[in-house]
Image (cartoon, rainbow, N blue to C red; front, side):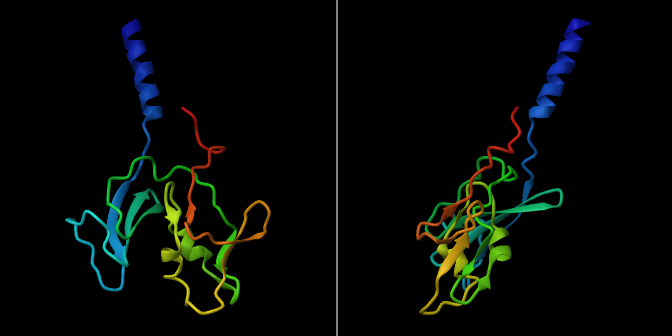
Length: 158
């Protein structure tokens, strides 16, 4: 009798620990000329590889940039994340691209200028900035991009 109780408790614990990572529904390239091919091992020039992950009604999109190897994603794409901005866009024209960019928020993604320039028309006075979520101050978007981090304060501990 005790063995069965122990097995039931262990099964409950394992069920609670099992994480639903969702599944990949689509793979494609953000590109003007290239189409994604399953045989690709690296992202072609002037392209961004995108994987769409779905869990229930939620969608997360993984990004891999040109020249990088396309490898399996490690981790949970649906872990809660800290949004690094309240607003992002071109301050010189007040063009807001927050909603477009927020479609690509996923743990581990790096939001780079390559992605932002797909949503903005380039011009001589362009000034890409984002509003810091805590201070509200405008921050010039860094050349190396912004990494999307897991929000440790809301992460469920097991």
